[in-house]
Amino acid sequence: MNGTAGSMPQTEGKMTRRTIPLSLIVGGVIVGLHLLAGLLTLFWTPYDPTAMVGGRLAGPSLAHWAGTDRLGRDLFTQILIGARIAIEVGSGAVAIGAAIGVTLGILAAFATRTLDDVFAAAFDILIAFPTLLVAMLIVAASQTASLFTAVLAIGIAGSAIIARLTRILAKRVLSMDYIVAARVAGSSWPSIVVVHVLPNIWPTLIVNLALQFGLAAMAESSLSYLGLGAPPPNASWGRLLQEAQGTVYTAPFGAIAPGIALVTLVIGVNLLADGLRAFADPTRRGRR
Image 1 (cartoon, rainbow, N blue to C red):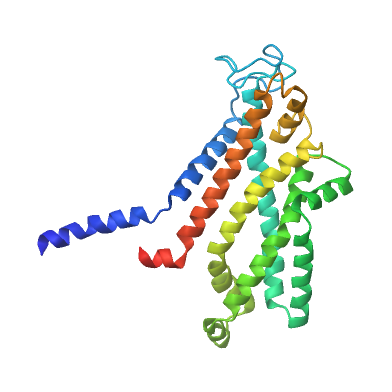
Image 2 (image 1 turned 90 degrees about the vertical axis):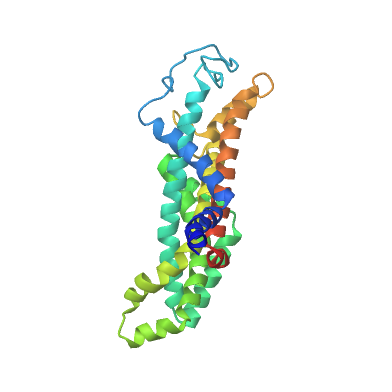
């Protein structure tokens, strides 16, 4: 009895560790490395980002790990700064999209049936347009290509997806019996949103926000590639790819390096989202 009882905590501890999905760990490590690289550029970079420190289009070496670009600037330094821009754009766009989307989604869930149908139709129409196209239209309308404009445009473009998901999740929560009980007990609608709705929809919503982060990073790179994103001297990965396209045959690493950085970030975010989805799955929680 004593031996069996003594071994149970160890078994439970092992089961608890196994419930953490591998994708969550791998995705967290990849995204964490990109985040660390981006934060590092706030205090230190291997070289001055604008300084011509080597020969033009030099290959990778001990002095320049990713080689140099067509102006002789250190490419590894540019990629590190690109990581910071990707993190800034992803975080900013998700924050803007969540603020707009969650607010509209909650309002739609509480609206009358006719107004709710109008909200639902509007969300579906906006979602039908590609995020990048909507962002391009917003940037073009502002007539100013800047990092802030790109973040704002991408955030607004992605808000419809968040709003639609929030509406669906919130309406599901509002149909529960404990919401009726809360209303009978005298709880106000704002109190119900804060106490009951948001805590119940957040586990599912956070997975979508993680995916939106990766989409925002890709959208910013696409805008920069087209000249509508962060202007020079901001070393966006998209702008690095655009600058390297003319020398892709003579100096391919100039296009390969920022491409790998972008792809690994998106893969990391997707793995992180999959891990969060698996971790938040009620059936998995029940097996722990």
